[in-house]
Picture 1 (cartoon, helix red, strand yellow):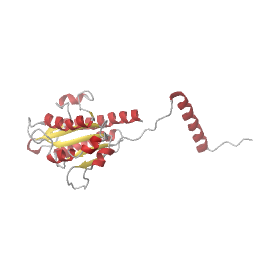
Picture 2: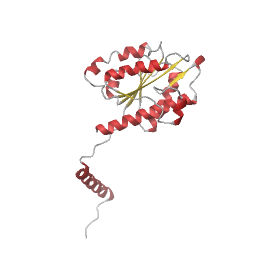
Picture 3: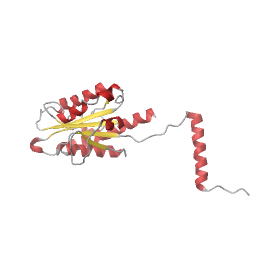
Picture 4: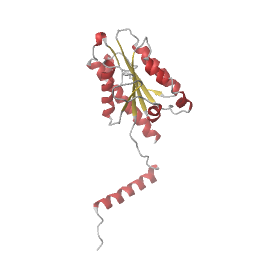
Length: 215
């Protein structure tokens, strides 16, 4: 009488056979790895911090790990390095508006990426940007576009917020990226926070699709 193998041994043999048949039909099965998104920030409390929280919630929708790194000293002692950029698959950059440009701290850090750029290690990275300002015409779109200009030079893939991901984005008013006009230090409203969540969600989704395609 033949002895029936244990359940774990049986499952291992069955799964091995399934993989073998699948490879014969479709070629080798690629292993999927988890997406590695990075939030690159200036340490500015208030509005940017709340937008960051919402973007991270968008990451969590896809169960992606997340790392937040600041380009200056911060209470969490998590200062960004070039290794962070080389590690990341996707990047969300956040900065308050400074005369239609990003803050000096972020700009100074981005100016140190020439070595990675020259080696082509930032090409194919998925990038997106978000911002806040204290006045209605304080340069929200210009600031996002200024951060995205760096992505173009890297050869990264720029992922705008757009309007198509969710109907609520039609009222956010900024297809370039999540933003908020913080008059008298007002916190972001629900519309701005939802736009941030959608942006984080799209970044995780698009980056995951590219990672899967690359194997």
